[in-house]
Image (cartoon, rainbow, N blue to C red; front, side):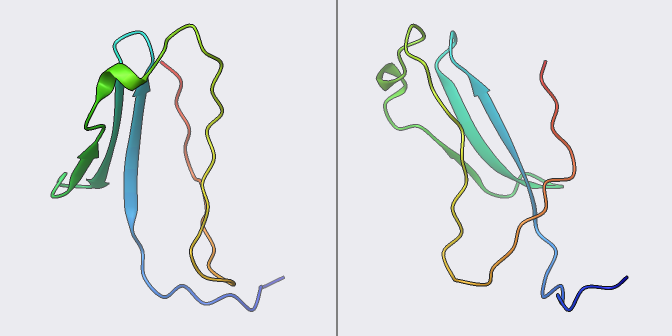
Length: 71
């Protein structure tokens, strides 16, 4: 069965989160040409409970998560 969705562009990114080391980075793949990270890492409190979520900007936009790795 084929869906009616059409892939406009293929973009990949990597998210790294390490609460104890106060690291949150998002990088474009495969060459890491763009990296975003926290401006004030001390805002991360390792004792606090956090949730990770993604929100898409436009209605109808789709994202497929193909790999999650917890290390």
